[in-house]
Image (cartoon, rainbow, N blue to C red; front, side, top):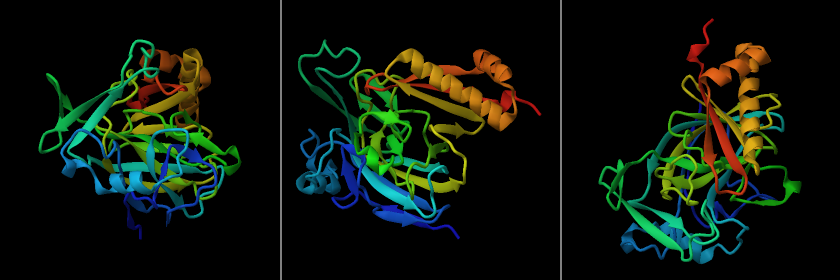
Length: 312
């Protein structure tokens, strides 16, 4: 029978600013088990009441000295027993909730779409209603739609440490707002055990995330970690209900779009038996390709196709 495990953020259970390298798991689970995983965002100096700051965030800032080149605090990694290179890790996102009474949005010099326009860094605090369904920012009341900006597996150890800022074959900082509760993310296993991690919690985000952040916030998510053997999958994709979500990443917009479109076509061929020409035509008619994020160095484009249009 599957089990539910809990993984809280602490100095012993997070990595800060990097993905990969000589990591070892902080938790090991059986395929089909679920993990209730919590993440933290912000700093102990956030301009909010002191009791709003998670104790775990204070501990991590006070004691974790091994920082990578990125900025994100990631909870994990979690090993899945028996996961081997060439398998797929199917991450069922069973539940996500906001785990703090506030979030924040940062913008500043040399970051974001208009990186040369900002002369000073600015942090805006977003407060939530009691039910944590809406965030208040100036005159705007923003519906919360929480998701983890970063979910992924560890790449091969000999790749070394990779900044947490960029997405890649391993997933990472995809910032894909479609990966909400009820979605399943499919990740290529690139190392024994898969070594899953999550962080960079978002309360809400627009496609593009153009000023470099969303509503950054602490989250609690429940993930079911399953294995699909021997798929040979090489890039992440997702599904939510009948909607397939393809993903493409590249420094060049055109290449990111081509990668996302090519993946969607390949998924339609493999999973629905369409020819490449049939899938290409269907994508042109029915698939929406959107800017996932524009600000992480490696840009993202994702495709959305409701496969209910395909009949038997």
